[in-house]
Image (cartoon, rainbow, N blue to C red; front, side, top):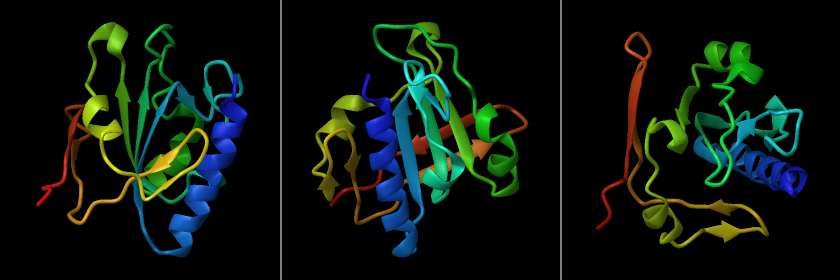
Length: 140
């Protein structure tokens, strides 16, 4: 119901991180770039253009077929942005929400949070095998 507000907040974080020269991992529920605000976050490319990897995950209570980056396919491939789909209804992938939500945010808005770590997140992908992993940073 508030996905347009989420999109606005994501765009604000995107602009801030681009101006600071910080690429980021973007995680969200539903389809990124969906025209239907009930199925995902209705962002345009400019609102997420600083992301180096994007995770699209399903809703807990509603099965939505993932877009798998189809809204931004040209930009994702041209700019070599990693795109992951996590679909809990089909046991496809996993996000450790407990760990993520337990991390102190650098900044929070009403619907979104910016997390930052002293060590980098490690992202490995093999497009030919359609496999990838994102590893938590080492925390001292």
